[in-house]
Image (cartoon, rainbow, N blue to C red):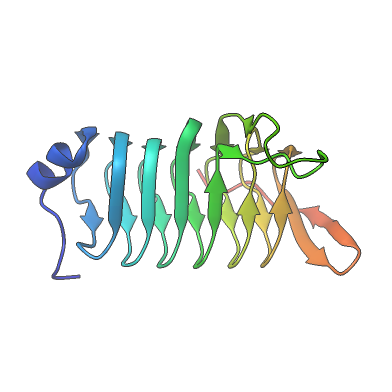
Length: 169
């Protein structure tokens, strides 16, 4: 990527700290962002980040992702990643209520070390994805995903296929 923000640019945008060798496309958009970028973070074009976001070492945010940290903190552990078109929310309407003017759902979101979220997936407020988890395309996550899980979406809901082996040390 040649069209990338400098470390100084990212600090001016609102990040408290920016690690070494970060690659953040100037085609990504930031609104009222605060947080931290670890060493080797990559944020691709057409991603939108807002609110409080903490990205660990070697995190990858693919194109067209939305990270909304306005109702809590989004924390992604080292070596984790989001495939294209993933949305992560820390604030959302409560669609289980009779009216949309009900109080919003809010909560921190954490994505564990060495975990990946597949294309088109949505992570809802308060969700916790454990270390070394793998989520397939188009999953909707609300709640906890145990460490090492492999989750896929089917027409009838989410299915846990198996456990992944721990990453090499």
